[in-house]
Image (cartoon, rainbow, N blue to C red; front, top):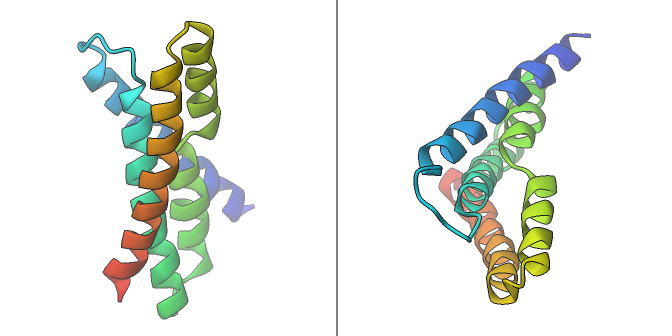
Length: 120
């Protein structure tokens, strides 16, 4: 039962952080979904670091539930990325949609890698 609470707590905090980024960027009128991209990039960097750390050192499983599953799961958002990309296509912003897909995929993979490398 504690694991569920840790995921709940971490996920709530991650979601609030993601909302904070969106709120900070809301004053800028952009077609491109930059807030989601930033949240996903930061989350991948954190997740890469935490996964690398857990593979290298003896870490408790509670931090996995709180930080990896909870915080990173609440902070990153594949569903919002998908929805925003779909809307870009629907609004005729095809170039922005493809740029979003490519940047999200490439930058998030690089951040997972960098997170791993930070631990080394």
